Image (cartoon, rainbow over all chains, first blue to last red; front, side):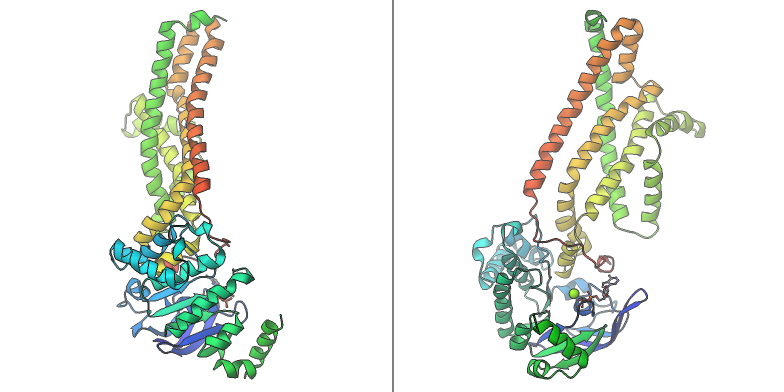
Length: 242
Length: 237
Ligand SMILES: Nc1ncnc2c1ncn2[C@@H]1O[C@H](COP(=O)(O)OP(=O)(O)O)[C@@H](O)[C@H]1O
Ligand SMILES: [Mg+2]
């Protein structure tokens, strides 16, 4: 479903991603971990071309991402994205936030879009907030709305960039629960997170990055009990010991 | 001081006529400079190669010139190259040139004040650049722009008095003519036109303040907004 082959990415002179090779199959949940600045967000953002790759080959849904023939707006409709800071539209209600892209990008009628939006609001557990504005919600509720907004396009892939990092600790659980349900339903997910419990429980694979390279790719049980790389071991001891 | 003489019906009507000219010139200049300023601001924001650069250069030059110089330019210099404008047209043209540059900066910074994350969220859901502009950037930016735009309109209204130098028959100009009749009229007349300027501009700023309060209560901030480190440039292509 997602395939990186020898992908490099530069910001000017600075190489953020070096020789990335990664295959993600349909229905897989891949958790990307690594120190801050190691290129996790950039890797994720290449998948829907919020960042363009410098060279190599990146296929998403059998389409070449950096090809002129690929309509990026069409491809993006198949990929939901959830951000660290939610990025809800503050001037729109929850319902409008969720229905905007289905109505404008997919061309679905307002009635149908509202129905779909309510379905996903139920799924994330806050149907009663449909007419609220984002500022009236807690961080956890905002992030669940953001997830519903991503799902409303009925995407094949969901990308999460540190979805719980901006949340107060007591709200992390409610967001992770929604993501766990999503994973059980068979959604293809790429998740950048520091929540090692989530990785352990839900991931099919854990990808460890450092300095723009993928250093290790293992099943979670193996990764957490016996990381192959010294740097992964060091990283784990840091994140698990506090 | 001769208040009775200064405030004769004839003088009052004459001053009122001056106010009419002030308001008319300001109104026309506001409409056009708002349209032109919006277009220039959006062009600069959109970072179109070459074009945005040219706009930026022109705006920066004009913004850093005294308005008085631009008024002299449209009235005294343009005829030298064959463009002869009436006093009123020269004043309006100068105001439009200057205020468009000022307003374009307000529009540009209003657009720039929208967090990158907003644009990323919209673009990553498959909305096009124009759809993102229409549904996400403009509605939020406009709300933030209204107060500074109204302030700029107030400056514009006051700046119409600079056209006294090319004898535009606006409020200040007509006041000077009244003063010319009798030196005892000077203080009463200046007092009166000060009150008039104040009332007109203060009511405009009341409108601005009302909009500002409304904007502040309307603005629904989304959680913690951190400066986005990712540039929107690539994604806007
Ligand atoms: N738009 C950009 N321009 C220049 N450098 C960037 C940009 N975005 C990220 N970087 C740099 O790339 C590196 C990787 O960033 P990122 O992918 O955000 O890392 P992570 O998500 O793992 O913390 C960092 O050193 C960061 O400063
Ligand atoms: Mg990151």
